Every structure is written in structure tokens, then in C-alpha cells.
Length: 68
Image (tube, rainbow, N blue to C red; front, side, top):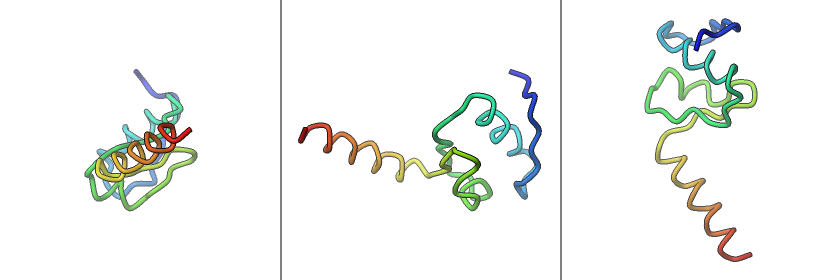
């Protein structure tokens, strides 16, 4: 994929491609351990979270669906 939208908001220029890809794809999450990305927390509509945070969200949704 070659992004048509360019960004430059992250302090690590190597991370631009991940933010560009999330814009192009409409991603709900970027799941990463990268400290530079994690400090952003949210980019447009995409949450930037750690793997542990993502697992907690999935677990919470699973529990909610199991109770319904």
C-alpha cells in the first residue's frame, strides 16, 4: 500500500508509515509497544494502545457479550 495521506506528528519519523496506514485503512486500533506511538494515544479516530490494553478491552467486550 502506498499512502496518499502524509503525516508528520510523531517524534520518530519511522512511525509515520503506521499512522498513514491507519488513516488509509480506517483502523480502529494501532496495537504497539512503541513508546513514541503510545504517547500519542489517539490519532484521528484510531486508538493507539499497548497489547495489554487491547487484551483488556477484548476481555471486557467478551464478558459483556457473555452476559447478554
